[in-house]
Image 1 (cartoon, rainbow, N blue to C red):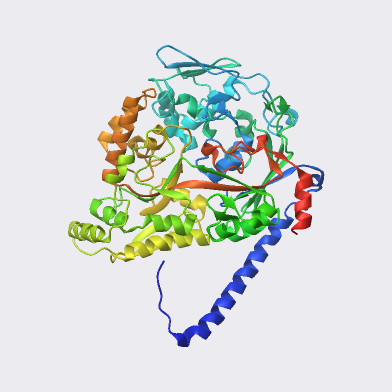
Image 2 (cartoon, rainbow, N blue to C red):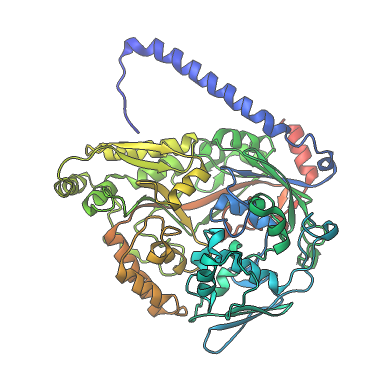
Length: 599
């Protein structure tokens, strides 16, 4: 934060300005709450149904599973679409279980051929794209079509990196789509086909031990070709899946609403799922409206904004008397994530000057950042591997530039200026959020680098715009992070593999030695040898510093006691959807009593 000195003579003027400014913000807050509190009034069906109220802190970018690559869109899409496998909801440690598959795959002895049985009792949502609007049975062909759709260059899918070089013949199919007009969607692919309606066969180019993990990732969900043909380019706004909920309304920038899939196939402990009739996602960008809605009982689950931590937590993980009186519950767990300031390595200023990147990294007081913006709920990041994951290397701290040392920062800046041929102009830092907290986080970095004479201009974007610019390399520096999709460090290594430029390798990092290590570990089963290679690869990245690593987050999740059977999943840490809603139950009588007491 920048510090300002004020004289006593200006106190009255400043006090008047503060009162006016605070009152104005309060009016805006109240104004913003009205549509959120009234957006269900035109839907009388909700009055007699169990409705869960989720929150989203950014706008949803797309609900096309081939395009979903961020947690906000995934939160909604995960309740609408499903994949062949998923994490067991209750089992810890985590393990994969069949979802749309009828069983775990049969794998050849050499680890390259997977035969996957597909359930025969799963139906797509009812939708106008089907004859008479009746959702049809899912088949193995729907997976083949969905994956070919990702491979088709003309679709410009951001998820191709998942399959690139993995499946026999799929890269050749992609090459074919570059010139074919129209594309024959039924063109055979040697390594991807339906043996019959309920058997999917996948032949890999080489062993890929993490393949089953990817079969729970949203991009691999089945897609009915009828929906793509019917909706065309609007398919990202008209999702047709197999999940427990079907989208019925999407008010852009405000809310989304989904209803129970009446022919849903899932059960838990012998009981049919889902237990909740409707799901309502409110898009509430600012922290304070979100917090007030939660206290009013208008939101069922919420994180704790930094400015309200004292209202919620007395000390450690002990809830305050206020929270206890309201019977609010707390779930806390380490998240498998890492956050950083990224540098676009093709940028002629920051990308070509390693001394400049090091100078910036040594400027940032990470512990202070964690205290200010997360109330101490985090751990300093020295590399990209989170401490909660197997493969974490405690020794990486000794090699990183992830601690505050202004003398080193100034020394590296002098080196950087010699390489640059003079002083630096204003640098640019992009933030994927426009709310107060994101602005303050950017200002923190601004102030940090200002200590050694560098100047940074903040660029605040809404989430979809930020992602689009991130994926085309428009940012010079950017605040970002990654939440592991599955419990394997290989997921983080993909962020630095050069063939994944521009996504998910958004820093556009390229190191042949790293690529060689990645290609080795990508075909290895879990072993001590592979762990050592993971750590060796991380050391290469930390030495090159495409990111100034900041912190690993510790989740503090609040929910009202009327939300029952909520079991956090660290790999679906945003529990406002992501396929978990179907497991929750609601005690609506408790909710009604709460609203009457705390209205």
